[in-house]
Image (cartoon, rainbow, N blue to C red; front, side):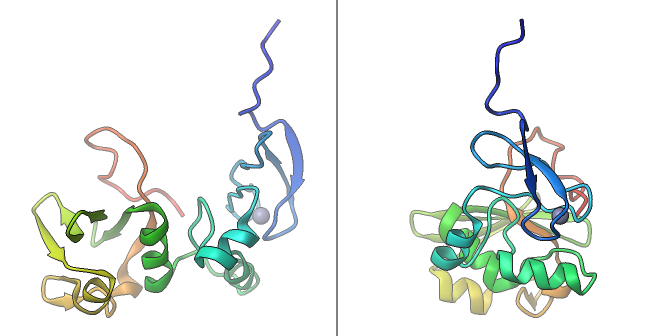
Length: 164
Ligand SMILES: [Zn+2]
């Protein structure tokens, strides 16, 4: 007999964004919603209240609902991204086909890709001065793809952004 696995999506739930049928494991973490693509954890309202984000999607739940109703894809703002960094310490995004990681380190924040690394001394420095090829990150955020929490992968895992 197969051993019961609490990490499997055993439980029918209503998607907290679109209301469609989805499935969650015994800890409340859901599969990707087949209708809207949302993934839930068990406490996204609290996550928004406490941290201004959701997990694992990053976009806060109330804005995700608005984006869904407007027919938009879920995408975190630059401020959501910084809130995610405060919460999770390791973040990712893509720009023009390249991945960038943003990490909290002992003496500040690093913005890194396969070609180099820049350092910022704190959140304000990162928010105001982080740049790619001389253009402020805050200014080119519309071009940024898939801002997200860092995930594990092999050397080539970040070559292409995951599908939204
Ligand atoms: Zn949904």
